[in-house]
Length: 291
Image (cartoon, rainbow, N blue to C red):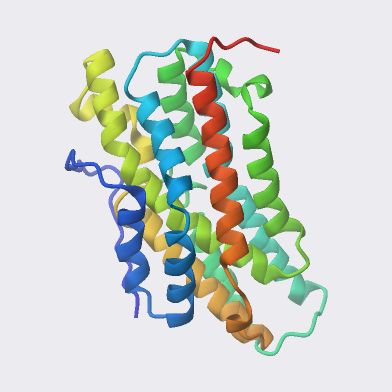
């Protein structure tokens, strides 16, 4: 049984400045899940992504260890957002599940299908303002606009091809692949990866703000609210909901979850994420010129 823990988004939170590697953040959560097949698959295939984790971590360290011109920061915040902006994709996947009923497709257990849809919808409550009453796109906008000194970062010209490909691949899996299990498993992978990322980057961003602008404490929390609200139990809960959604869906449809391997999904996810972050690093390290 997985226990969910909810947080008050407006309650002051104290964070340790110690920085852990992403994989060491993710692994303990994976070891807690009760589905032994998913646990084995996730542990096995994330373990093989060491180089990708290093590439991603290097980008965040390069970003937060120096001062960068606004044009380069515009590229970072627009391109990075394409790898973590998934609320609408999850909502679209949920809609695809409801269409099984609407179009009268064969379903072995409609009650279980409803529970799967319910689990999937819980992943996007915070993003869509259902919990906390704040749209997460608004607090991402505030964070990015602070660092970029304006909202030029929203322009499409600041999107790297690799970031565009990551988003396109993820949307294809969730919104176009004929096998809905592919979208559900992609959601599982995304949620646990994101947990590791936000926990890893928070102390880096806090130190960056402090060193570059002398901002700390409550003022820093306001600027970094998008990262903070995803730390702690938030993304872990989303991961648990994603697991429940795929378990309930496969049971509702009479599908064996054990017939699916996560190897390709995890490999594709991590390679595309690393390629995106490497493209951002190239921008940070070079004299950037607009096309």
